[in-house]
Length: 267
Image 1 (spheres, rainbow, N blue to C red):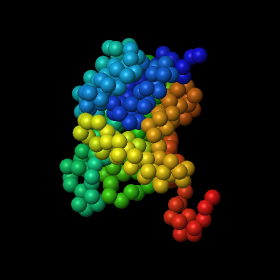
Image 2: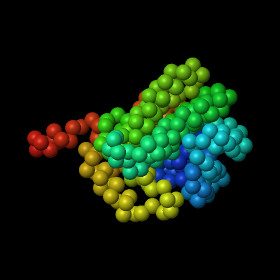
Image 3: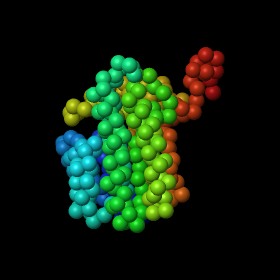
Image 4: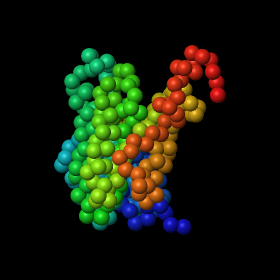
């Protein structure tokens, strides 16, 4: 049985762990060859090794144009072309409120989460043009849709990804290039842990528990939940879908939990 991504080449940033790694693994299962990019060499190499011959590792910083250009060159060198781009790399750090957030923290969050997506598009689009079209996917967040106190820079960066997605979709639709983003809810990933070491299992469990409380469906999200949406957007099944922010949040942004708590209603 043919895979949904047979013959495709995908470049995935932040693919050494979490949602990116889950997506790289799923894409390979569905027939794609994958460049696994991460800023931590050990993560990228481990993820690529786990996939096998269908993957190569690349280490770089998505906020640096030279690294992004080299990333695409490596993908072409390894596999001949690029058909799918998943701008997934992102960070979440302790910010404080808008007044007290240090300028350096704001700049770092914007550089990775928004500039990194822009660079991924800027230097990736020529490769998709040469391939005759393709799919660009970026990781946004429900934080780009609704305000979340204490992470204003993160909210701004993800809101920017949504706006950039819509602008780029209009610019490149006639070239057969689709541009969409995914807005995860509470997903059990290592975001915020930039040590390069192993993920603390207790921290992952806390994230799952928090997601279960935030999501009306009653469970936290996993990397595979996001990977499944990315697969749809990468595949030919979504050829009429572009410029969209696809929300995967277990109902978080659709249901007013405060109303239910105040009224004591249950459904």
